[in-house]
Image (cartoon, rainbow, N blue to C red; front, side, top):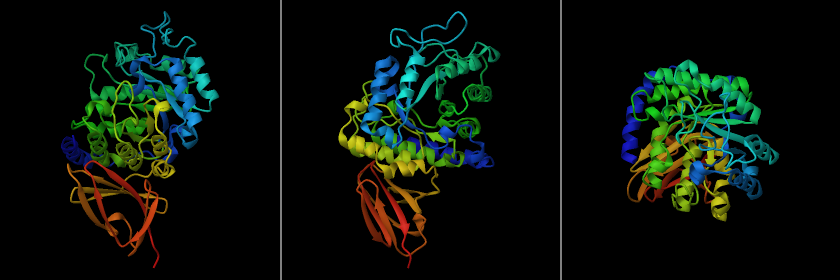
Amino acid sequence: MIKRAAAVAASLAVALAAALSTTAPAAGADPAPFGRLPVMGYNTWYQYGAGATEQNVLQQARYLVSSGLAAAGYDTVNLDDGWMASARTAGGALTWNTARFPDGIPWLAGQIHALGLKFGIYEAIGTRTCQNLPGSGGATASGNHYAQDARTFAAWGVDFVKVDECGGLPSGTTLSSLTTAFEQYGADLHAAIPGVVYSEELPIYVLGQSDFVTAVQSSAGFANMWRVAADESTLDSASDTILGHLAADLHLHAFAGPGHWNDLDMLVPGTPSAHPFGWSLADEQSQLSVWAEEASPLLISTDLTTLTPAELAALENPDIIAIDQSGSQPATAVTSGHIEAVVKKADGGQAVLFANLGTGSGTGTFTLSQLGISTPRATGYNVWKKTTTTFSGVTVTLAAGQTETVVIKPVSS
């Protein structure tokens, strides 16, 4: 996967050159203050798949609060695919599966809000969701339910809407017409729900194709966050997921900024029931490091109640969260051997992610100037080890697929 991701990244670099004439919207154009920084919270998908119940959702929401995750910034609870009834009402409105949500989605949203959290929901751009339930699209482009569903979500108290694409599209749909559909749905959502966060998945349906960067560029104009990487569950290993995403997203940083974020998919600590990953703590820390360096949204998808104290501490690491929530994008990446150093501004210095892209243990050596530091000496704070050292250059040794994150600051002479 690392090789495949590198090949995709190379093709993106060519396409990116033509696209850079339009960059991410300015901060003043933010469609949603809630999404001005990368969203943090919880998503049901990798734990419950399409089978989540209202009690499942409430259990996870309550644990966000009791564990301290909400206080650390994880304040949004998103209900993914599978919540709908099998058909719309006679009036064409969406409704919920009453067996799994007997008290209803509006009640559930109210319970989430009472905990001090925000509530998110899932829909699809076509006539069917990925679980073959009612989507928001229509058989023709003009026959959709986008505005109707946006008003429904507003009435239910929804704060965040994720819109997928799993087919059920009008005959002859092109990337251009699909982009128009996603843009229209977003406009309808913003008209109905001031301050809504709009998350969409247009780019991943042309992932690896020549028009992928075009899709990302378009998404940056109307969405708060957009998926730029394959589902975690489709990849082969932790290093495939973590480093493959790193390789791909480095070419997309020009499109991200306040209110508009490249979404690398969900954080998967522990062993989510629907898709048990079984990663080590080091893998989980590496995923957090990559997501933070790329300023990706941080949405956890697992059974929070089974996480170890060490896993909770990793998710709540204030230094990692600060790097993510700074919103700054990587400015450069340099390589020594199999070690890549990804550099971005943070906290008066540079947040540097060192990643081993090789298949065995590797060592890399970097000058301070390569890492964005102009002074002869600097301090480095390792955000996981909580250690600070002073140096005139950096040598890093990492196991295959592993990372370290260091905040480097200049030392005045």
